[in-house]
Length: 253
Image 1 (cartoon, one colour):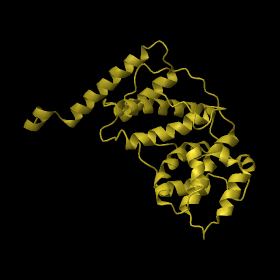
Image 2: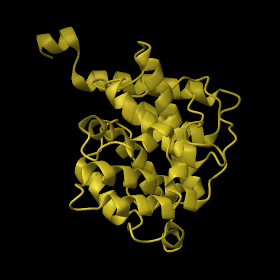
Image 3: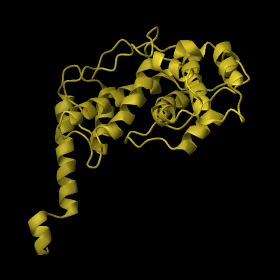
């Protein structure tokens, strides 16, 4: 073994030691009285990716799936906001966007800040810069209608991904959302519950990291990447919070 390997240890040794630590940590979760198989599976995913959720997290929640049309309305409310800010008036008339919103009651699926966007200029640069976080909300909602699984490592969505969602996984702007959802294949509630619980665990690790603890992977930015996890978790939990508004979704960890 070289001098440097003796001094610092080889990558293989460090990886083996980390694997042993993760196994030991997982064993502590198994001994928790309220632990479930679902949570253990998600903890294993977290540890494998470098996230360390607290062992004290509860596993029982009041979760009830919202109607499919409401999930579609929230997704398409985000679509309307993106179209408003990102497509020039000469390419898409304001009246068409506003008619789409009114016809499908999308105002009821926007928070107050989002509604205010519709009162701003369509080329408002500040609003455009802020709309990127709505992309992260959109990903889990689009996943429910067949888009690929939300990534767990906190990388922000690309413009190309959002374009793909808008074109292939949302209602056309001249159609009714209630009619559109009738022809969509949707995710099973089982998979939604699993993914929401996973992001609950990830969100807990992120919150701990924001307080200075070493609970996220090396190179993971607790604020930037953590914000992505927060936004994706918001959509997942909201989908399972029937009769709860977007603003009142419980995002505690």
